[in-house]
Image 1 (cartoon, helix red, strand yellow):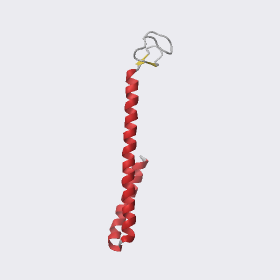
Image 2: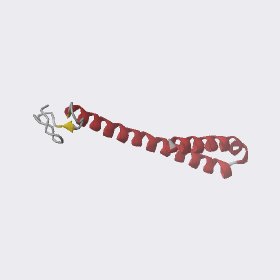
Image 3: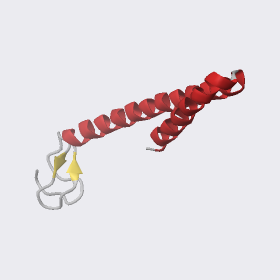
Image 4: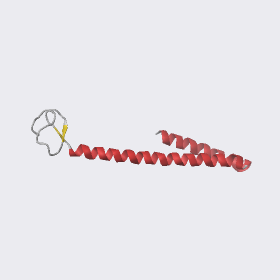
Length: 91
């Protein structure tokens, strides 16, 4: 969330400075282009973080789906287990 807020802020101020930069010259165009580039970097960072987060969520879902929940104590056990690792009840 923070990366997106920062990206929007940098992109907004970068685009906002482009308008007077067209009249003033390179004194405002160079900083505005730098702000736009920084904003785009934050957008790229956000997408990388979301991809990494999605990958870890998928791994956790796979790990949880392979487990079997004990009917007595509710703990998760391996799929091949015949008895619960916590309470010893038959699965």
